[in-house]
Image 1 (cartoon, one colour):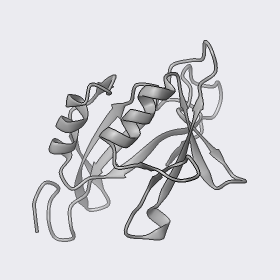
Image 2 (tube, helix red, strand yellow):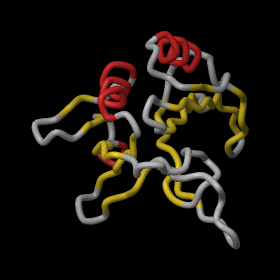
Image 3 (tube, one colour):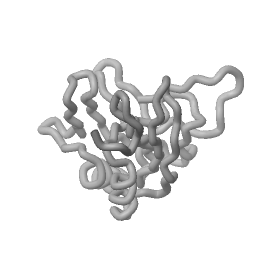
Image 4 (cartoon, rainbow, N blue to C red):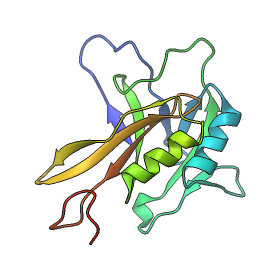
Length: 154
């Protein structure tokens, strides 16, 4: 989850997510709940739990994520990374090119960026952004293994 806060005038866009502190989960604001549900469960590795929440299991408990889809306010501003609040969710990838191709082929992505290289600490990573059908923003991050470069298999 990426939390952004600006000093001074608020940016023009809206954050795609809110954090429900009481429940300890993210809320994805969506303008199209049906398409968003398909995006999260067919294009991304989330599953609907018995409680109706979207859940992502991960190897470490701290990396697990639960998301509840909530309707975006009527006539709300377009979501953007240049907003105050929780602007995106980052998902780790082991094959960013393949993940991007699969997401784009799903027909559920409004827009996406090609992947680019970003230096994080002393390592190069591949990064890409996708926007789901309800305005949800997801960052894909393919980080190299220690001693390697992003995109290399060890």
